[in-house]
Image 1 (cartoon, one colour):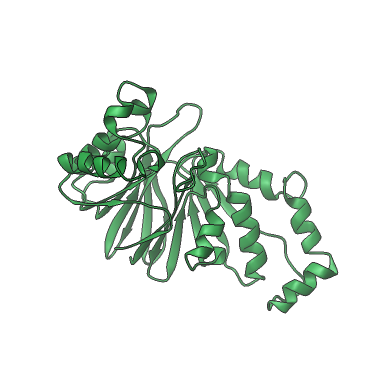
Image 2: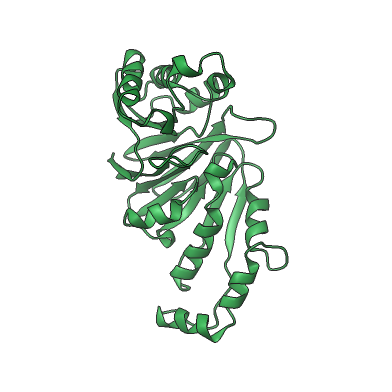
Length: 286
């Protein structure tokens, strides 16, 4: 496990300094992507990666600020891969399979017109072969699965397990994920409120990447204080789980100087490990 790339670390509102959620964890030579929010594909490339470098994508839940760039990611990965990309595996709570079908299905997919034209027209076929593609050009294929708590996926170098998170149920299901490797473990909470299931999932983890909507005093007594974490609750979950390093994300409301420093101080009162404020386009060595 080498590096965490924070592509997007905002919320649904398009702040200039943060918009949506998306993260890439490099484990050896593999890259695991968590959520695919606004402009994630563009930011991925700007951080030195290509979509076809990612073979596994995990969704925490299906709010648009976590999945709206999914069509762009799928089509860009397929097109730029020029037939040499590996099969993409996509995991997430209920609606993951449906969303994928609604994007790519030959008969009902919202973007089927694009890939159908590209596998048939001489212009697109010429571009494809010029990048090393071999005809005939094949349609995009994605292995998308709705998953629940438990073991989600594994390879020789890592395994991903999940647990329920508390956010906007019953309208949308939410999951947190833990990546276990021989060199350490990283937990991605998604947009959870304080809950025992995510704290238990994170027990003893090396790194906890946690949504931190705002200062606790600003959201206390509101729905945000129940169904999402603020500074104090994020810190308390990290302390209870005994994690070593805390990365604060989904933090656009506190991502300006003044509130940022106050927020870090709030967290430090409850958590004595390393604290990283997760700015967009930040690479964190692990």
